[in-house]
Image (spheres, rainbow, N blue to C red):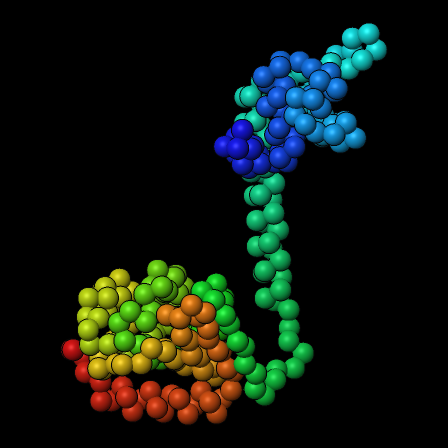
Length: 254
C-alpha cells in the first residue's frame, strides 16, 4: 500500500481516497461501515471520501435495502484521471506563460538610479541568470571573468541555456577562462557563435561580469551559493574597465 499511494496521488487522489479505493478493489463491494473497519478511517470522514471518489468517477454504488453498497470502477479508469490532470497542467502552463508575457510588458513608472538584488541557493543563481538573459541585448557585449576550475561546475548545464538564449538574441560574449579548463572553453566556442575566450591563471572562487549597465557576482561552490546583481552605471563602468585591462593581458591560448 505504501508503494501504491504515492502513485495514486499523482493522478489526483488523496491518501485516504487511495486507501478506500484500494480497499474496494480488494473487497469488490462494501458498505460504508465495512470500509471504516477495513481502512481504519473514521465514519465521520468516510462519506466525504466516497463522495469525492464518486465525483472523480472511480467509485459507484447501488442501493440494497435502502443502504448504499459501494463498488470500485476498474483500475483502467485511472488513465482518464491522469489525462484529465495532464489537460489541467497544460492549461495552467499556458496561463503562466501568458502571465509572464503580460508582466514583462508592464511599463516601469520610474527607473531607480541604482538597485541591487541578492540571490541565494542554486535556484536563486538560476533566477539571476534568467534576469541576465532578459536584459542582455546585441548592442552590448557581455563580459565575464570566470573562476578557477571547479568553481562553476554546478551551473555548467544551466549555462548552456544562457548561451542558447544569447544566440537567439545575437549577443556577443567575452569570457576569461582559467588556463586549466581548456576543454570546456573549446566546447563552448565550438557550440556557440559570438563567443570569444581568453585565458588567465585564475585562483578566485567567485565569478563576476558586466551586462549592459549591470554588474553581477556569484559564488557557487559553498553550501549556500549566493550572488548579487547590481544595476548601476558607475559600478558597471568601473568593473568593465577592470575587465578590459585583464582582457588585454589574457592570452588566446593557455
